Length: 344
Image (tube, rainbow, N blue to C red):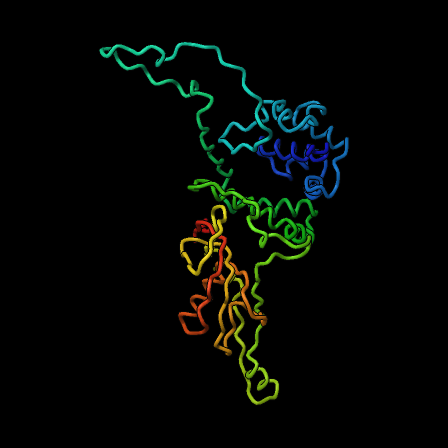
């Protein structure tokens, strides 16, 4: 499927920003836009204009036609002075590389075996490695400063764009919360032992039924009340003190949950592997403690349902405390998991 000129330009802008290690506020200021305006153009909510193209090309030091020729061509036209010289950064795949011309034949240390009494030939330099050798995993570039500085810089930029209006800045930050958190997450992965990857859904249950709908995974609804106590309180027979839950602490505690770190694989059978994580189709059993809420929330309908790893582990713990009958796992989509994925 051929990409449109608009889609190609968005990919080119993203590639050049990665190569130059510039952020959206930097590029937006350079071409006379605000960061939200640039973000809308990159997300496809608005279109790049010809004036924008001229300004982008001038900013990156290349003719406009080279900018519009695609990310691979534009990256090759980027002046060397615009590329960072400190540290390295994971390269974004732009297009399949063109086949390299055949190298001229030359003698190598292994072409003619050396006599036994001669000294061994020196190892070839890294530049002479065969083109077919496996590429090394590039080192991830460290952030320019401490991680909290990234948050402060983002807030300061939002305040500047909003002209000092804190309410408008807060609204803009809320809209960009997810990409900002993912950028912070990527910066925190410097020195990690494995690369963070995003995999497409592996099962139909993980796909939304419609654009604004939900997938098949049950989300526990926390709305719950003890029917007997509620009736007695409404009738005035008893008075009760209500303890407010510390929702902020609950949010932070969620950062210690077991998260998948690889491709989800399908399995069947009533067996829970504590070293794996994912989603499970379970028969939740019977909740036998009416004075306490079930981890499933307000679900009333019987029968199997798909739940996530934390909900399954909560049901297993509740069963050990005789609060419910043990859940029965029917099938699962899981991968290797870690409890410390979000610790940094």
